[in-house]
Amino acid sequence: MKIVVLPGDGIGKEVTAEAVRALHAVIGSELPLELTEAVIGGEGLERFGDALPPDTLDISRKADAILLGGTGVPEDERRAPSEGAGYGLLKLRKALGLYANFRPVVLYPELVDASTLKPEIVTGVDLIILRELTGDLYFGQPRGVSRDETGARVGINTMRYTDAEIERIAHAGFQAAAKRRKKLCSVDKANVLETMALWREVVIEVSKQYPDVELTHLYIDAASMALIRNPKQFDVVVTGNVFGDILSDAAAMLAGSIGMLPSASLGDHNKGLYEPVHGTAPDIAGKDLANPLAAILSVAMMLRQSFGRDQHASRIEQAVRSVLREGYRTADIYQPGCRKIGTRAMGEAVVEAIRKQKVGG
Ligand code: IPM
Ligand code: MN
View 1 (cartoon, rainbow, N blue to C red):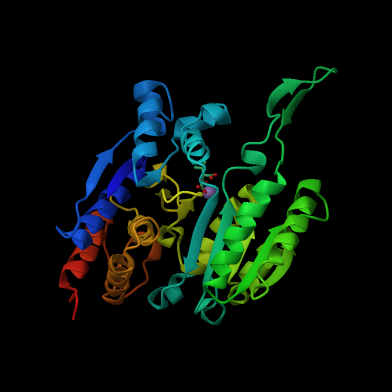
View 2: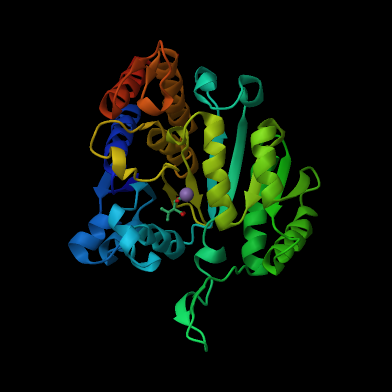
């Protein structure tokens, strides 16, 4: 198993360290693990003047899977978007063709009271936001800031999707739904944007190949409301890059904290990129406060998706369940009566729980 670890910036470093510990704990000496660390984001800019140094791209291409912490630094606020630390990650996703970003939103029963929403609304939430990851406003041309003929400054980004790009993400959505509760909700803005009208048209065309999956459509504004009002109606939600970015942060609160959300970014090849949905949180970086569970759960997704190791994946998920059951909480999911611990101790608790598991009966 050749894995590249890209800790990135801020809390990315702390949470990936714990994720790697969990990986070692669950694999032990059963399988050969080859881990290589490389630089991305703000650290790449600082050391090599590039948020995605060529070496990093190169070894990422050669790896079976990539585990990433996060990219983004406070200095990004003073940089053009395409020169910031976060852009390194965007370039990596694009270069590797990782167009399908799965963001499962699962509320662990132990965390029902950690959600800001009423227990009866969120108990049992189990959905996936499937975000298209290599198109849309993020990559469409033209883009930039220029002057028009009157001398006014104009900012331009382009919402762009080809039918082929919509088709492949729609297939991913139908296939994911077919393995679950067989409901796919496609989220667009087809009433206003031509790109999104094409999106809806193509999704409907693709749906003919999946007669067993029930397809519904929502506009992004209505979808944001429905997600908070009655999240349990959703199984798989497929949407574009920008809407998916926004919707998945909102959906994080259904799971109690964004610190609980893992993700997998996949393409047409087996290689995947696994990362927590949360960012780099510079305000709490280096303080042993971050929740490492999203990164640890991303390792579980990696074991399942890239290596077909369902059992190892389940063991990590079980271990996360059991530390929550034992009352361990980082600050973001803390409730009175629980044991508040830091990043390091949470990682250690997961490793302990993995070690205590009885394997193979
Ligand atoms: C995410 C992040 C990234 C994105 C940033 C860091 C570029 O917010 O993965 O959701 O916008 O895709
Ligand atoms: Mn985001």
